[in-house]
Length: 261
Image (cartoon, rainbow, N blue to C red; front, side, top):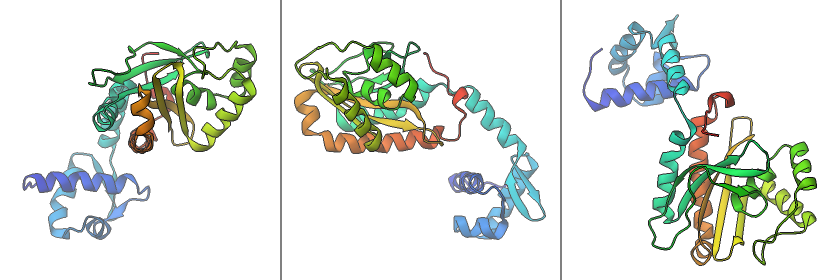
């Protein structure tokens, strides 16, 4: 396969990106138009990829080859959720200055559990160790997960759960909580202000799969004064990273997204 430094690397990756979204494949002409590259510079790359089995060529149309499927499967099989979300959590922390967290409903369907985090470097910050459990009804992350819980499980949770007043702002009326959960489902955004700890607040958004179902929650937490003042920009940062993660996980079967839970 002829090479010409970084340009060839970029074009090879661009070829895979283009073909990954075309289930019927693409001709050399279509690939050249998509990449804005001359056919003569692509022929050698395409032939080399076909020779290695990373592409197939049938009647002048190129498709993703078996070797690329094998490689993709190996990558997914070794992928773990905490490692996958780590770059997004790091970017969130750097962009906002607050602690970034990822959480799921624990197996007991009664609490949330944080499975990954990137802690703020502020002297005054929110801190939560990985593996920490929190109530679902009194935190931004918890309410997000509760809002997206299967209806039967949510109904059972609300029927059996006694709501405890951690602070004067903790929601204790289940009708009020239900209305808030409905709003969270509609907007995709959950917020808590001094509901679990006075002076500590959080924001969380949903990371969904290809079918729209919840995979996990992505959130920020910090001192109330800072969180409230920057809530709009924090929400945009969370939405951006949730979209980025969805691109990575959207086509991955749920059973292959392993986590520590």
